[in-house]
Image 1 (cartoon, rainbow, N blue to C red):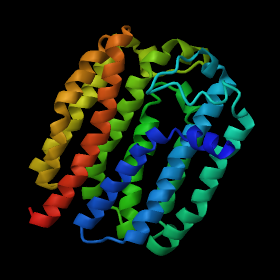
Image 2: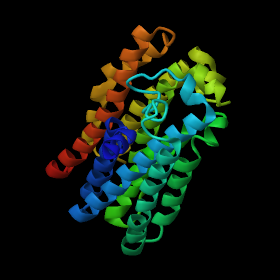
Image 3: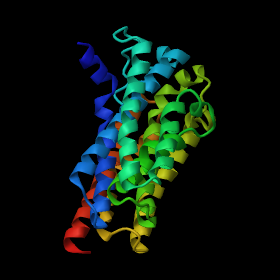
Length: 298
């Protein structure tokens, strides 16, 4: 029974993001001529564990700060609710999150030894984003940069490095849309939590900019994702088939429209669903683009 509860505490439906990010980073490395199925699987496990740790620690800190008690749970936000329901203790959730993170240590050391120690700074920055996001970073202005970096850009670069043993400008440019998308994933999911986040003295964009200001910010970053992809292709920094990511534009428009009506749950919930699809599908379609470009040498 406890095993099932700890599995649910990871919020497995959200771990799909880590899988898609891992696929993108691996496809980029394959396109550049380096691929190891063993390294891909091991690094992917490490990435999923890091994301699971982040989810568990966020639940712990949300509960301790009192935010959890004031939060309205939605299919896309509000945490697992397992501590609030008394199914797991806050201590159990904290140590579960820390154990997931500690398991990542030998995986990270393995890749540092076999692929290069330049991976270590990336791991350390990612760990800081995971551990300090809820208790510290959320109390700074514009905290959404942290998941954008730690759960977006760095996972793609880390997966790429685990294959190639190097960072390239091509890999960095290709990882930027992931950062923008994950930033926006958190941003739109914060709208239902505005009042609850105020309890924890948080400074999310919907609080500091207001609903309309945050919606404009969200829209700007969404547009930037597609402009970045087109511009990178035009400059031949990423392969042309990554333009497949543009197929999610209709979903993005739906999410943007809903962000300007965030006070209405009937409009916000479909927008949040579209936002999730935009993130996952855009990244996955970019990965497919790398495969097609490698096959057709285009």
